[in-house]
Length: 251
Image 1 (cartoon, rainbow, N blue to C red):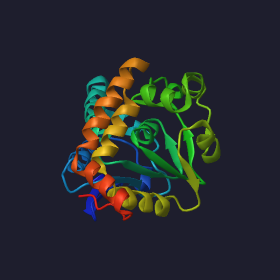
Image 2 (cartoon, rainbow, N blue to C red; image 1 turned 180 degrees about the vertical axis):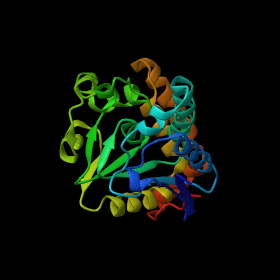
Image 3 (cartoon, rainbow, N blue to C red; image 1 turned 120 degrees about the vertical axis):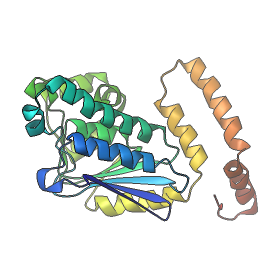
Image 4 (spheres, helix red, strand yellow; image 1 turned 30 degrees about the vertical axis):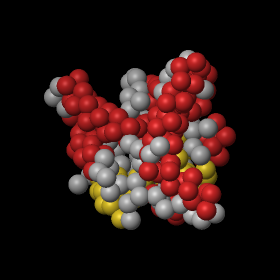
């Protein structure tokens, strides 16, 4: 399989497994990622840890496969259909998605970073859009997530010039949350901690942050979400624990 997935202690460990080639996204990997995302929808998953084997996180699309496709348009639509469905699932999970990224992150790799709720970068990570350098336009939600993470002006700069960012520059721009010498360890600890948290509240928070609405509409959505969270089992347990001065026991 191009993507492996296993669930341990309520954390789904999703790993890109074409590490010997830089984890380029071909049709098989896109379909495997979709299956992994569907596994993350199960009730036993309370956090997702997204990692990659090899020296690079994801170098983007598999251009060798694309160049060999008899019908390139039809092939790219197959790849993006599977990839985009996987990304849709990751963004709609209540479970927080934590990504540990290292090495080269290019093209659709930026899209994987964009669906992570918390992205932890290794010090050797580099980020580049790369699409327009080969005459392509972006996919993997990059034109949606990148402007929201780094702002429209910086997003256009990165997408049009293919300027490469170091890990420190990516953190300063807002593309990743943290930079550390031990990205896998830090990300795993975060995922484990989040798996013990209030999953329903996490999901409501994710949806509120990611939605596009006017300020008035956002206030209404926040009020509805807060009322729902407060009467949920997690909300009731959180308040009971706070008043009793003990750690909450979320289920």
